[in-house]
Length: 212
Image (cartoon, rainbow, N blue to C red; front, side, top):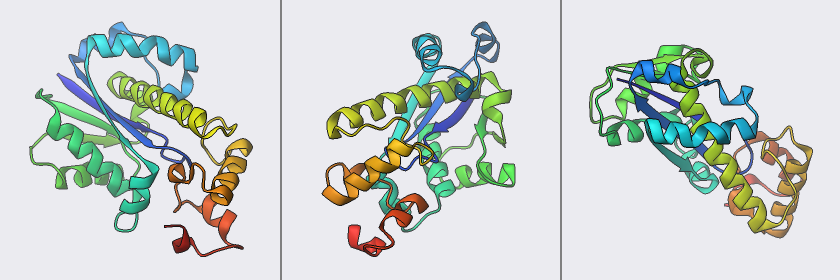
């Protein structure tokens, strides 16, 4: 039995960081045509999502923008991700022989050590760059994390009424929506205040701490 963990929304300026864990028999992951979620269309991801949920144990956590804003006063983003992945692994009711995670650390295996420091149980953790591309179990986790985040972004967009797509700073509509959220206060709770994009937007108006 093997487990995989991946995230979606790490670089986003709006909405949550989504982290998912998938666990099952290693050979069973080969029965689905899995790939890194970034290489699939939304419809392809959403078609695979129920198959993954039906076939394997899955769990996830959404780290809201508000929680990220608070935690980043004390921790790096890598450390926050490790804390949440440790939580998912401690809650896992199965005993995988190995856990493979996509590593955001420059030195790959350092991320495995980060996770282990926050865990109550002992598991073998392998952290690698591009694990979501190279291991079907991590691809499955990537798909789950991305689908969950997409649905949450849809919910936020409907709630606040602003026209934006990904929530990433590369999306001009997202940047425009962030400006409006900061100006009006509507939806500001979904903005990651400690991101450089947000700091740039408000630098000429107010100091960052005035928004907390």
